[in-house]
Length: 77
Image (cartoon, rainbow, N blue to C red; front, side, top):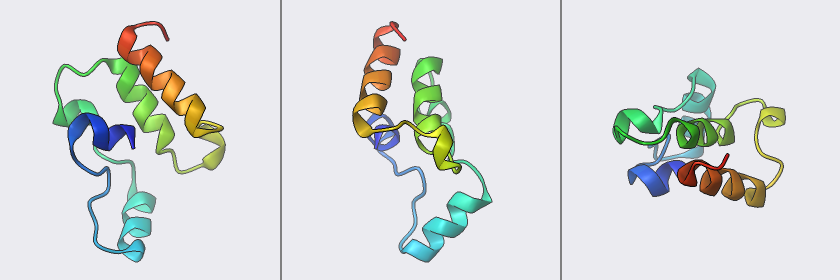
C-alpha cells in the first residue's frame, strides 16, 4: 500500500489475480524512486521490503510496515 500511496500507482498494475501472481513471480515492482524521483532511499527500501516475494523478508505486521515507513520519511529509521 505504501507504494501506491506515494506514487499514485499500483506496484503491479494488472486486471486479475493470475496476472498479479505472474508479475510478482517475474520480479520486483518498479522501485517507487523511479516513479517519484527524490523519494528518500530509506522509504524506497521500506516499500520494496513490504513487497518481497519470500514472506519471511516482509514486515511481520502492517503496523511494523507503517512504523518503518513513517520513520523513513522522517529520517529516523
